[in-house]
Length: 123
Image (tube, rainbow, N blue to C red; front, side, top):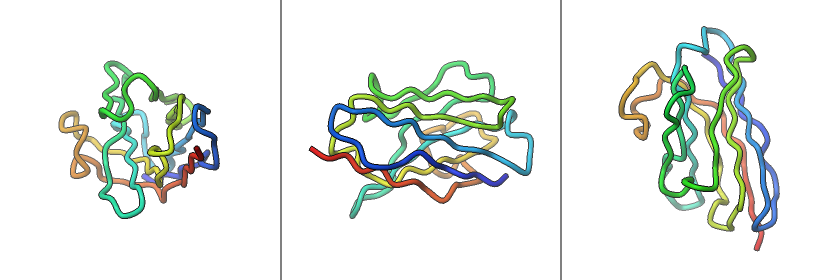
C-alpha cells in the first residue's frame, strides 16, 4: 500500500483544515487507517484511527471534540477534518494503514506510512 497525504498548510488559530490520504496498490478498504503527528522536537503521537467499516472511530486526547476522521473506501481515501485549530496542533501529520484491529493508537500497529503533510497554526 502506498499512501499520499495532502491538505496541510497554514491556518489561523480557530480555523479549520482537512487532510486527505489517498491509498494505492492494495485493497484499502480492508485496512485500518490512522493519523499521527510529530511536532518539532517531540515524539510522534497518535491523533485518530478508523476501521474499515467506519464504525467506532478512535481519537487521541488532543483530537477529541475537534477532529473528525472518516474514510471513503470507494475512493481509497481517508480524511482528517480538523476544526478549532490551536498553535499546538502545528506538526507534520502522517497517515498510516495497517491490518491490526487493536492497538490502534500504537505506531507498531501500522504497516504502511505516508510521507507526511505539514500543518502550521498561527496564533
